[in-house]
Length: 297
Image (cartoon, rainbow, N blue to C red; front, top):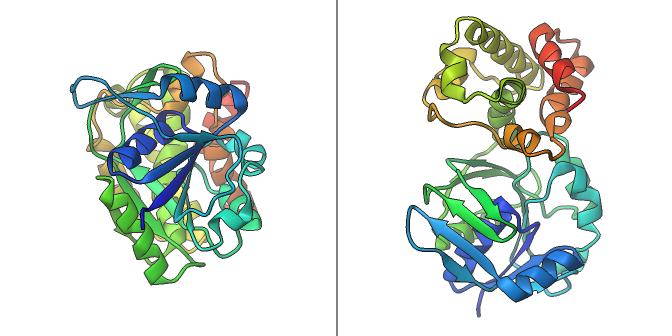
């Protein structure tokens, strides 16, 4: 029987994954508001990957998901999540796995309230893509890595979801601790998102700047202390090493959003870490300053 997958939020991330699912011959349903559904029905999704000519794919489109799926990929913005979930009938994922590719920490509670027992924590790595039109995506590198873990699902169910992603050419790593899956990314992104947004400079320039580098190192150490209070032990030196290994020209999606006049997810990213810090009484002066300076964006 053919695998059926759904993508809630076919933007840059969701559209790229939807294209991979279609080319893997999965039945693929993209769920979105009426205007996006109409546009996709007319134009499909155009994706240019690794310098190859643009490929146009045509997934199914719907304003609501009612058919059963094996995997639901959630890739909407945090501020759109609750409204977007109303488009998904819980029965559609009664035997499937919900994989959210959202930044931050607090979306898990929202998803679990809607889909009890069906949610995996996930983080997206090694992914670089941008839109040049509403449904035109350029992905300079074809690679993508999803790390996953779940307190809800059995190992067998998690592995089944991983095989679906791997069948579409996506690398997957399974972890035993869903908090670690979320915090490994949150620690770095909570620092890099406000820094790249404030400066509109790439990560490579910031990590060699004599003023910014020590501030970033201090903020990473603060975020690691918050993770530690949550029971996730991450070494600041190891997290900083990961930052130094990043492409020097890389930035963050938050910085791009602000530059292009869209609202940012800084509160969902850095704000979520600071809310955990306050709950545990962990002082984060540098991270708090970065958040305060971006609060109006």
